[in-house]
Image 1 (tube, rainbow, N blue to C red):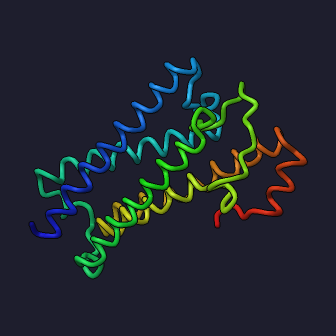
Image 2 (image 1 turned 45 degrees about the horizontal axis):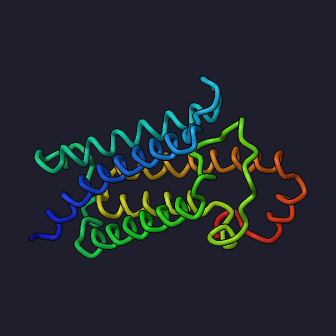
Length: 200
């Protein structure tokens, strides 16, 4: 199979499976624990807007990648021709698979403590071991790696806008979540900040 065609189908299937996996994991954890795993924050709040932007782009990416499997959307995506090379496309695929693996690992490591967003009703434990001993935000770092991979697998103005918007939203959400953990665990989190970097 042609590499370009392989990557085209990979992207559609990848984002479809990401969506199904995320949704099923959230439903399963809620059924088992009785707790909501996804938290947007109060309507109109900063974290609520971050989540709306992130979900909007995720949904658009999924739609574009699925349609692109059967209909030639590329002329409307602003393909960056010098970057549209087999080696870079495959590098993007590799980064996306690496990101998916790390995300699955961190989710499993956190287990019932995993939340998407800030849960105001939960005194969230401060996890500082495992992947959190190398980065204070390994999950967000993995997501950004996946976004970079998407840009390389589909180098275009569309994916560049998605990358820049996604990275900005994740950076803002990171600051909000770190402030929340600082309020919950003031002394412990300050010591943790001194030992482990925000990213890597």
